[in-house]
Amino acid sequence: MIVAYICYGSAHSSIVAASIHVGLLPNDRIPTFDEILSLPHYDLTEGNQIGIPFYMGIDEYDNDVYAIGAKSGRKIMMKAVRSFLKESGIGENEILLIDTLPAIGLLTKLGGMTSRRFKIISVGRPFTVYGIIKKYNNFLDIVNKVKSRLKELD
Amino acid sequence: MKVIYYSYFGCYSSVIAAYIHTKIIKDKVGKDVFFSIPEILKTDYGELKYIGIDENYHEIYAIGMKNYSDNIKKTLEGFRKIFNMEYDKLIFVDTSKFEPKCMKLFLYLRKTSIFRNLVECILYYLFVKKLDRMKNFVLDLKLNYM
View 1 (cartoon, rainbow over the protein chains, first blue to last red):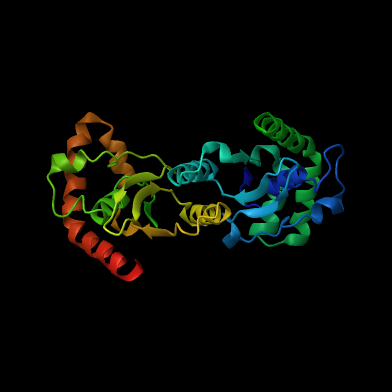
View 2: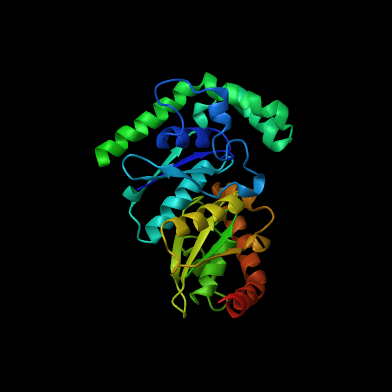
């Protein structure tokens, strides 16, 4: 199965959720500032890369995990992916799409905008990390729910 | 190969182009026939609508993607690779230039019974007016890209 975490720009929340899922970030404690900054693709995605599925790793159930950005069109994108796969003869149980944007707070949104859109990275990036740390439990909830579902399906 | 005609709304120009591609629409059709096309003026953003198959066995679709077409195209292309569908090439065709400028207003007004007939007359007139250009557009696509 393919597990895809979806957010606005595939730079913060989807990367963090996917990283927790594949074990790049801890599931039992709050990660450090450097642990988050060292994640692949973290706060690095450029505007023209939004939409490309980034491979983040494989989980304990042999599912491939991806992070994708969809701007504000997450629902449309999810529907397009589902209908595309259906038309290609791939069953709905082959993919799990999860919106991670509700997990983040204002701090990460503002930091992300400052870093990615306005390119003031030195100011925006630390704010995104502090925002993630502050809301880390939201990410754990999302990933744990996904894993429970995967366990049921396994 | 899948040929996906897309526009903002996915219920007018992309549907007409897809019907021309599959030769379901060959020439001018009557107003009643035009509005009896199931996908015409039915917005369902993100839903890939299967229209038919062309003479080269390519599957033809229409879709509305609002302003997210650039991202969604990359995502669908990405999933095509993830699921190893190398045999199933995707061709995206933007039909926005054939979309009426006030489509949003037309769709809104069509919901009210007083304007329904007027809106349908305008949209049908635009369809007839643009039909030859759209036929050439689809023909050009078939000759150059398939």
